[in-house]
Image (tube, helix red, strand yellow):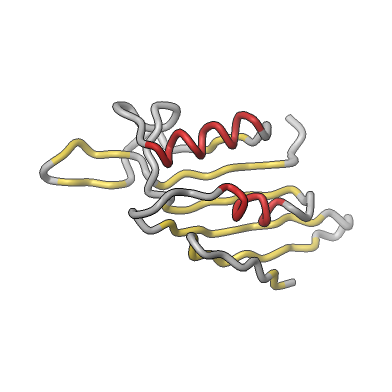
Length: 117
């Protein structure tokens, strides 16, 4: 079941998958351009169906929770949003972005919502 979520800061493809037991899972793949601030209202729109939800992508956001080193403003926004909304942060243990002039970083992360632990 395709889902249209209008975004202004994120490029995304979002779908809702209906499982055989009437459980719905929302899957979103997101890209955030490196410039401009993150608006979590757009992420909340993806979560608005209260389904089990995965949001993965390139957020171009660094935070010490998933990236060794310094945090940036968008990383702080995402981390605060996830913590205050009880959303799990899913991040790799190795860098996802490599730069010859700066340390490698993790900018590709995910979030999981509405899953029981």
